[in-house]
Amino acid sequence: MTSATTRTQPSGTAVATTVDRAPTGTPLREDGSVRDIVVFFAIGYAIAWTTWLVIAWAAAGAGVDSDTFLRLIEAGELGDLQTPLPGWVLYLLSRVIDFSFSIAGVIMIAVTRGRAGLSQLGRRLIAWRLAPRWYVIALLPVALYAAAAAVITSSEGGEVLFDRAVLRSILFSLSAGLLASLFLRGAMGEELGLRGFVLPRLQARTTPFNASLVIGTLWGLWHLPVLLDRDPGSILTYLVFVYTTTFLFTWLFNHTSGSLLPVLLLHATINWEEGIEAVFPAVRGTDWETLPVIALMLLGVAAAVHLRRHPVVLDEPRAA
Image (cartoon, rainbow, N blue to C red):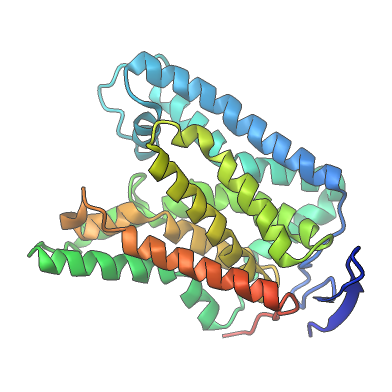
C-alpha cells in the first residue's frame, strides 16, 4: 500500500510525498540526474526538429504548406500530389517526428537503467488492473467530443453515421482510426518518454506540480515547427491547451500508480477528432471542438490546483 513520508525542500519547507515504489512495481519517483533529463529533451528535440526540416523541404517542393502536408501524410492521402520523396518514406519520417520523445525515452532508460529499466517500462504499459473510474476518465474526451458534435448535428439537422464502414474507419483507418491514434501517433509516440521516463525522475527532485510545469513548457515548445503556419491566436491556444492538460496527465499517472495505459488512452482520445467527424460529418469545417477543448483545459487547471494543494495524493490502482 502506498504510504506517505515527509521530505524537506531546499527552502526548508516540509513537503509530503510518497514511497518510491507503487504496488504494481512501477515507481512514481525514480532517481536520475538533471543531466539525464536534459539529454532526453535534447535527443527528442533533435530527432523531431531535424526530421521536420526534411518534411518542410518536401512540402515546399510539393507546393503545400507544411501543416497541411503533414496531415496528408499522416492520413495517407497524398494522392497524386507530386512530392520529392516517395509517400512511404514521408510517412516513416512523420512517424519519426511523432515518436521522437518515446525514442529518446527508451534510449535513456536503456543507457541509464539497462534491461531492468526496460522491463519496468514494460510493466507500466501492461498495468491494466485499475478501477473502472480511471478508464472512464481516460476516455472522457470521447464523451465531450461526441456530446458537442451531437448537439451541433441535431441543431443543423445533420445525419449520424455508424454503419460497418464507418465503424471500420474510426477503429482502423490512418486518418480517423482510434488504433492509429493510440499506436501510430502521439500517444505511443510521446508517452513512453514524457510519462515513462521524465515524469518519475522529475518527481524524485520536486513536486508533481513543478514537474508538470517543466514538462508542459518543453512539451508545448516541442510542437512549434508544426505550428508555424498557423495564426498567432491558434498557436497560443494550442500551447495553453498542451500546458494545462499536462497537469491532467500527471494527476492521472500518479493516481494509477505509474501505469501508462490510462495516459495513453487519454492522449489517443484527445487526438481523435477525425473519428468523431466520421460519425458526425455535419460538424466538419466548424469550430465544434471549442467547448470540449475548453472543458479539458478547465479539467487541467483543476488537476493543477489539486497537485498544488495535495502533492501527497498518489493512490494505488484498484482492481475492477
